[in-house]
Image (cartoon, rainbow over all chains, first blue to last red):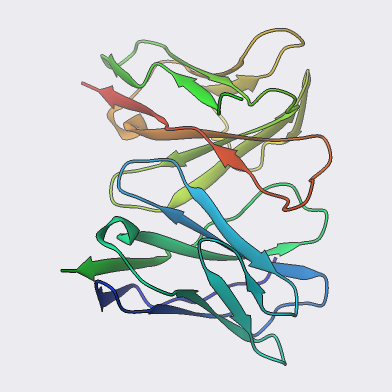
Length: 110
Length: 116
């Protein structure tokens, strides 16, 4: 699976959109981009995933560049409960396990 | 539909004792994964099992650690002769036989092992 690179930490004001970047310049055509988050001391939680098209669900939006070398997770109206470590993972189609990197520690400030 | 259940949530052992961590996957899930998270570090994959079979144990330490997922009952992660460095949170995840719509892994709340 391709390596992903994320900033170690970010801050965002409550109520604003949080934009979390991820670089995956070596991603191959059959690798999906997955996002998970881990709120302090809890188990990781799935957020969203995509291959080439932008995706949106009730939690977030995922914007993938046309060349697929990077992506951005957008939390449209961040709340204090969105404070967590966010992991961007490239995962080959059909692969079962997830390989976590260091993630981005997002802090939402009041 | 209950989520992934792990127990115990907290376990304290003295050096040299054995630790057994249990994981009951979500109903209908036949794949189980174990991850370890050392304090202030990321999640490290340990092992992936299907019923009665170990599929990928590339992240398991070579000694003292073992995992099983019997035909009946929960998956067990067993750590023999624990040392202080085994103190960590151990997370279990499960997934259905086919990856379904999202290919999502569903995680439990973890078991926190403290070795004195």
